[in-house]
Image (tube, rainbow, N blue to C red; front, side):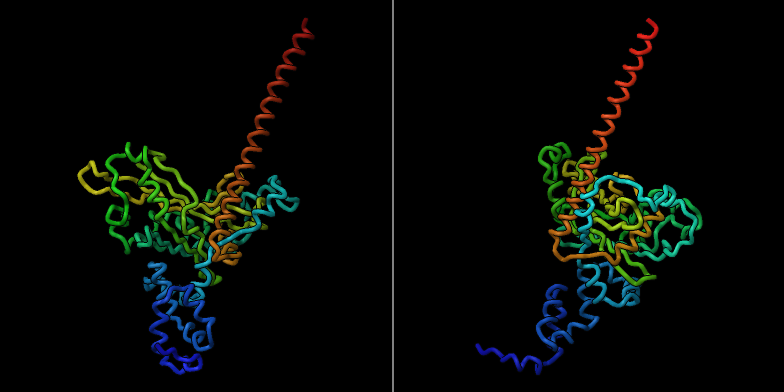
Amino acid sequence: MSVAPVESIPSLNGDLFYDIFRRLDGVTLANAACACGAFCSISKEESLWENVCSSMWPSTNREDVKSLISSISGFRKFYADCFPLIVNKEVAEYQQNSHLEYPDSWTEAEYYGDMNEAESISPSDFVSIVDISFKEKPICSKVLWGIPNADNGNDGWFYNCPFQMDILTHADRADDNDGVVNLSVSDGLPPITSLERERKDGKLWRELRDGLQLSWIIVNRKVKQAANLASWSPLGGQRHWPTEKDFVIRFGSVLPAKDILPCQVVQCILVMKFRVVHTEEDGVQTTLELTELSMQLEDMEGAHVNGRNSLHILKEALSCRRSKNYSQVLESCHMYSKLQNELREEKTRNENWLDRLCILSGIAAFMTFWYCVL
């Protein structure tokens, strides 16, 4: 078998290379671009990256989303921004001073967002592009233009209340029948005979936790930037909660909040909740229904961040550090959870100490009173 010499590669038909490149995934295509100048030139074709994005994020097949991506520097830049996940190493720096305090330059009103200054960030600037897959098969794509119930901040309700965004309630339902998203045995779920059996062996829960992947891309149309706030794979979850039919899966990332909140970092929590609607004992195949897909932000003490500060945090997240090394992303998330648990334990110890101090002070006051009386 003869092999063409390297110098003859550029002389080959460019259409042939294009046909080969359009079958590659994003990582392979980016690596091929580094091989030589000819490959680099071909890999700059926007149509190649449009194919990559559409295969990875089915929601980008929509015409309105294509127009949005084209307006923010194109599919190549979109992939470069959204394929790497957010990794925040400031969590390790935060460990050196783990006590939440108001900096001298902060007032309580500034912390809670009760300010009247003109806002430069509008809720309508943001677009959410969400895709869910199970065992590498797409099961749901949603697009949400703007942030619901914000009313562009015309009143103080959104800015001063806890921030939460529910995709299933407000997203465009054109892609799914009546907005209902189901997951069944035909999608790869294991059949379960009853919920009691599932509670004992947990087979359905393991398959659900190991097979689900989530991508939640936030785009800011004003600054023309995008970022993926999800962790791809679940960070944790709860089965049979709040009812025995519910399964809660949590994704997320750690976002910078420097100069926004005293804690400097917050956790973006993406909640996916499934409910069992059918089991094999019902005479039909095991079926789950997606009942919740939401986003919220929490600080180190577990308090929900309000709408005003959330807008600033989301904007900052669009330009923060990212990595294609998934282990680094997991490390930063687990480090945040560990530090948060340590802070809660310390807070509990301090509260217990104060309770004991109050009890001892009460006993001392009681004894002193009767000593003076007698």
